[in-house]
Image 1 (spheres, helix red, strand yellow):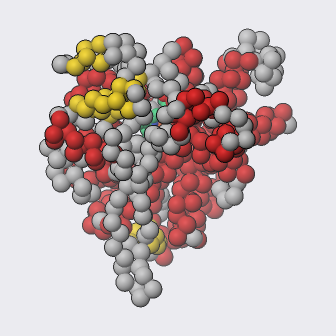
Image 2: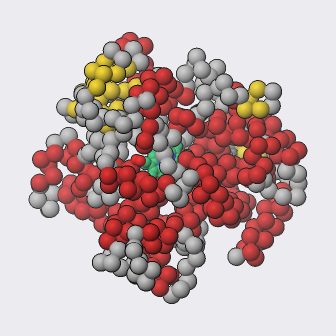
Image 3: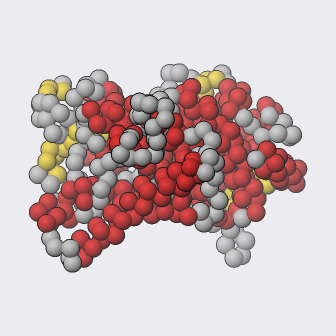
Length: 474
Ligand code: HEM
């Protein structure tokens, strides 16, 4: 298994061995699918038998098994997934648009004030929106204790998804080492961080609810579904044990799976803009014509902004957030084409290879949103990245509609009011940035430094006015 940006090395191997690669990793069978057809046929077509997850000793030691993204296929996973999905259907996510709009306006204002810190602003914005929607809490946007606690808690999830990061996954008996061993101490520290991630925002929400200071949010609605009597205290785990378990898991997984991924796309977007001034110019022309100078774009403008929407698709295609997807596991012995796949085989989908297939996308390394358009409209004949980057079968990302609304709106806002150019050195010369993805399970650009400046003085005023208006609305 290639270790550095394995998605590239795996595609190289296909030239020698074919699109379906079989191997053994740490004694377990692994199949890597590299073609769009095989991925759709196997992971979508055989979803009843390919929708489990591999278990790892580290995930158990880190107490991550309550996050349904890591659960094997079965009733517990189904209960969590169904509980989450009702809040993230295309219709349900329309409820969160006001929260997304507020966060995006705050982000524009932050970009105006401190453009160099754009990565932090993206992270704060994505986290604050989820905090509002999921827990009903108003985050501070900077140095917010809950957001920082959640971010620390996510460290264990990030680490455990990197194959080979923990020796215990290779030699499971190591889990029985005594607590004073350095590896056990590390697990203990990470476990504490995970526990705080589950508990802290939950407790803040509960305290606010007890004070009668809590509006609509996913958590309280979810908890109330699991009690039978209207007077039951939904927050009492002895009265509502299932609700407590499921709600803690679902709220935490929403952050775990939703924050790094969404931020990564926004970073990819600004890098693409700084490297492709012609694309940004064309997008400026589109939002100027459709939206005009007196307001910011809205989600209702999406159909009238096909080029901006194509930029969203191209951003997802150009650099994938999860280039090898999240591993699936098979639950039955079965035949796939000419291959026998035993139960318990790990299946990896090389999403990057599908999104960089030169037979489908001309010059796949270039950033060219127009590849998705024909006669000014989206071309249904072109492979849609939405069908790949969010995964497959019964495990397809349940946050995909929310992610699209959040990312599209933030992108459209930034386009409408900002210019994005490459960074400059001390002598004022533009620095050439090499677009390269980091070598992680969740990936983003290695270097996305850029200069973000308001397009015009009028655009700067619009940002300030829109920000002030939102604050006045509460
Ligand atoms: C652009 C942003 C995002 C990308 C590219 C993305 C991608 C993915 C991928 C590839 C998977 C694995 C699917 C599979 O196993 O085949 C996944 C799973 C998941 N995603 Fe996302 N995701 C994004 C945003 C979000 C957001 C915003 C949320 C929450 C609101 C979310 C929640 C989840 C959950 C809970 C799972 C686990 C599903 C399961 O195991 O049943 N994701 N995502």
